[in-house]
Length: 367
Image 1 (cartoon, rainbow, N blue to C red):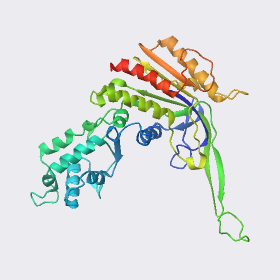
Image 2 (cartoon, helix red, strand yellow):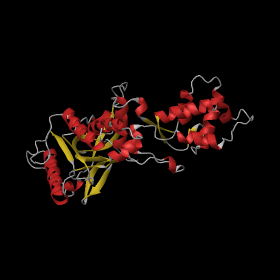
Image 3 (cartoon, helix red, strand yellow):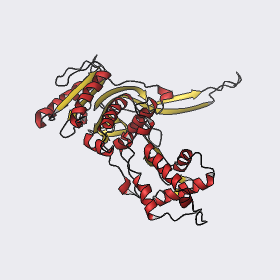
Image 4 (cartoon, rainbow, N blue to C red):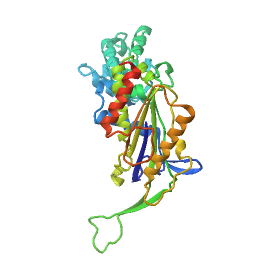
């Protein structure tokens, strides 16, 4: 996927000092939105729109003990259930301290259901009640049974974005999707908004602001790019090609229409993308950010978005000419910029784009 999105003054993704993230590219300062922030926005869209059901999604949390307790509703002794959960998680290598796991865990909802069921069925053994202990020695066969449920749970977001468990690498999942850091197609300078707040109950004779401060921002035309490995996605979803198709289309829509939500109450930069293109087929992925290695410069009466789309299409055609197209290949674009450039069929709306992408994925997956 290749997206061009012009955002008004905003601070959608900030660093530890509160400044909007940026990067050097081609020797010039560019606006930047991190890949992690974009993936988080996609996962929120999966949940809130909703594009995927709860059982087709995953949860990333340190509060696994409380979540499993919720799924063990009906167990009479909560303290016994809590002890069983903590012993099970410790046995799995997910160290629990003060009721929280030591690091964020990304688990599918089906995995959580299966884990809760395994704990329910072995409550006494895991709680230590059988031996009169608070910390049970989990039998090896029970530990292996609990490990077997951690198979990704056919959660689409987990299959797309992967899971890394430093202490248990064998339970990790290699991501099927890669998301680039969004970069502006032109150089940017950060600006400051100095603001004041008035105390509504100030007496008239007491002049001055009740509070003041400043916030950094910029506006930019961003190039955003992502790629999905269909074979890896099917593998991560345990061979479920229909779910892989659903997941790809959900990702296409969510990635196209979402951005991180930083400082939106202050800026309301709700600017949909002006150019959305996809290509599908067999061959090497191509990030086209090099179209903007030399930063674009505004031209009178020609928007940066149109200049960006024309540069993108030119780079696309150049790579096709030198390296050849994908074989087989499908492609299409939504273009609200009026850019000149051939080679990528223009489609009428997002629905048509999703239908064209679905046609491609069905052939590639053999659905």
